[in-house]
Image (cartoon, rainbow, N blue to C red; front, side):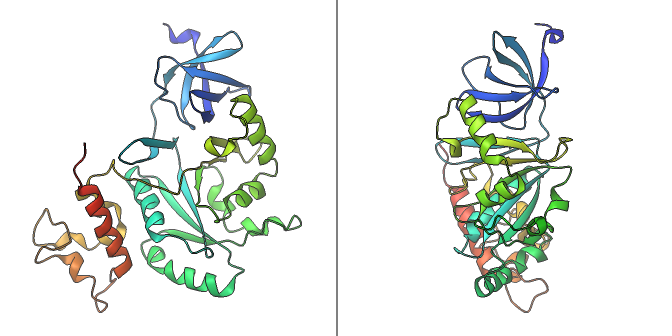
Length: 308
C-alpha cells in the first residue's frame, strides 16, 4: 500500500484495542490497529487510513523512547516519545521509596528525564521529614519540586504550579502518581477542563465509567507545544525488562561509586574490593544511604530470578 494514501496522526488516548487519534487539523477519530495485536500507545505518531467513520492504523512511526513496566505476567506500556516523566508523590500518606526508585530506574533505562514533585508542603512536619528523605535524590542530580495542591480550593491562583510550569513548557510529560499523591488535583489544576475532556475521550472509546483505566494526552496550551499524559497503573511497577547486572548503571548513586570495584562484573553485594560497599560508610565522600542500598539489593535479587 502506498503511503500517499495515508494520513498522519497522534495517538492521544487508548483503551483496549481502541485508540483515539488526533489529526494535524485537530480532528479526533477512533482508530483500530491492523492485525490482532495492538502495538500503538499514547504519544505514538502514526499513519492511518480512513474506513467509513473510523480509521485503521497502518504504520507506527519510529519512537524516540517508550516508557513501560514489566512483571512476570505482562508488559504495561505507558506512553511513547516523552521528554520527561513527572513522578508526583506526597508527604502524607508516606510515599514508598521503592516505588519511586522503580519509576526513576525505568525512566533512566529509556533516557527520559525524571522530575520529582513532592506534594503537601503545607503540612509542616510530614513535609519536613519527606523533604529530608529527598536529600539523597537532590544529591543525585534529580530535580525535586515542592507543591501544595489543595483539592477544595477553587480560588487558589496559579502560584501553586509556579515552580513547576517552567519545567513543563514545550515538553511532553508523563504524570505518574500513587493513590493519595494529589495527581487528580494536579491534572485538574493544570487543565480546568480535564474532567470534561476525560468524559469525552471515555465516551469516544466506549470505555464507560472506567476512565482511570485509560491513558490520555492533554494539550496544556492552545499552540499545542506543551502536553501532559495522565496514566494509571503506578501501584505495582515491575522492572523485569531490566537485567540485574544493568541495575547499578541506572541508579546514579550506585553508579557513581561502581567504577573502582576490584572485579569488572561486581554485583556490589558481596565481592571483596567493592567500591560501592565501601561507600556505605558514613565517613566516605557522597555516601550511599542504607535505604537506597537495600532497594538496590532487593531489586537485584528480584531481577536475578529465573525468567520463564
